[in-house]
Image (cartoon, rainbow, N blue to C red; front, side, top):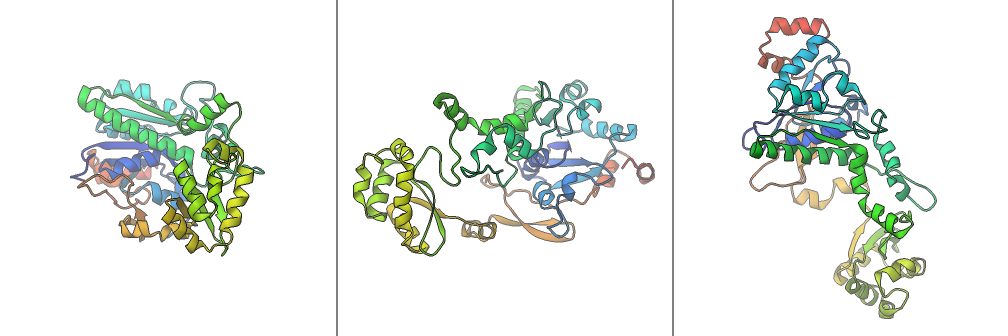
Length: 394
């Protein structure tokens, strides 16, 4: 697609699940051509996670718009030869194969750099391609557990996973930024640098604040449900009509305003138990009932009006249907139509808006939809493609 920042960049990916597809979808959003290599039998296993989107997987629809699907059996010599031809014309190669699989296929970063010096290879692994856990499988929740994130999430009584695939998303985001940096370096310095990201180290970066807090404070932040471990008051409270409101007080001006204008208890602002942020955290068990008792007498709409007037950040606790109908998304035009096999569905625009650039929101491909057209670009005629299909190579 012309007119987009990555127009003319070709990406070949041997990808599955979430992390690598998320990285390459972001490249496709910016105009890169992404040729997604899938197994002839079944393809990316994320296609079968569920069937909720007009028979398609919600994961696959989210992660794979604007890509071309080509089926290749990479265990066959003919399939590997075709992939090699595609790599000869590619700028970027992305893979998140199981531990050791890329090396067995000659698709690890070192091997690709030797064969294709101008190619930018990107490997996404679980725990890195070296080290004691290089051969260990890693899925999102396993990595949430290994980084300690699960120990921070939930209530004092029970841990919980986050509701989205944060380890995969973190890795896909760092892979995306690493690839963009490598493209820039190649364009400016003439050097193609390989990129490697692990789920463990990507989510580990997101654990930076609790890591510093724990190392230097001697204990890790407590697990407090919707409360914040190091800021108070910061959490949800029930209102008179049964709804929940979340407030966040970040500084002394806001604390003083909350006491005077919402709680109608200005003397609390200078109460020694609550005068500073650390004081309020220390005495959270005394502070929370005061706020809960006050909020519990006021209906949600009136309470949020008072909070807004006082300049206190607040929000209702939405469910997913509330999010889908959110006025910010509607009034800012964030929903755009995307075609999936057999239907058209709304999808969110990429969050980074570039002035004067409309994002690419092309269809989600059916399995192998582009096999014939891509192989034809390599010079294969219809008879040759038919033979490959008969031999189960494509």
